[in-house]
Length: 228
Image 1 (cartoon, rainbow, N blue to C red):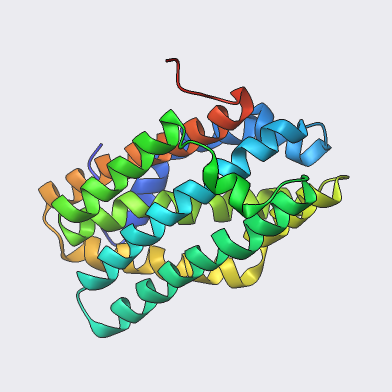
Image 2 (cartoon, one colour):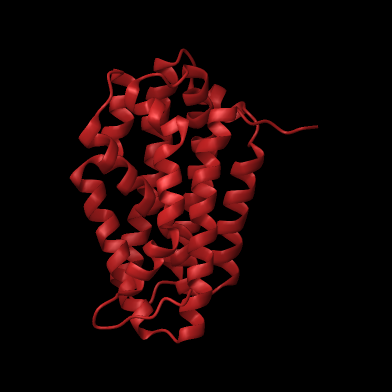
């Protein structure tokens, strides 16, 4: 699928249309439905929190690279702030979740990085370092955008479990939604300036990391570990 900007369709419209089936599968995944109805096993959520702590450390590095390669100072400041925010989330929110789950941030840090987490972060880091700025932006965008969509959807439905309600509120709140709108608008601006080939390459990175988002939740649901 070629994502061409036009008077009727923006670059981001094409990106989202391409991953809409993946997003629907995310909403139907038992990890997500379990958050909403409160049936998600605590061990699955604990696995998610541990792996998300690992993920966010590398994701923050990827955002810092985006900041360094940004086309202007405003975008540099924005991505640098997002990188700091990712580290803050890893240190504060996840530490609080681990405490509620009877563990600690130190315990989470000592757990091995899982196969899906390693694959996802390696792909993102390789893309932000080795591709164009638009490639890197497309690779980091699903983590922003899919979490915002999932958060908004789950916020409307809430959860009977107070722990899961806190997680939902973190991504469904308006402050996070505004951050995501800013990044999507940047993708539209740069997509409009890019060639058809550049847009197509960026779209492929976007589709790949959107799939990794589904895989990340699935790995938590299965409590994935290395086979050997």
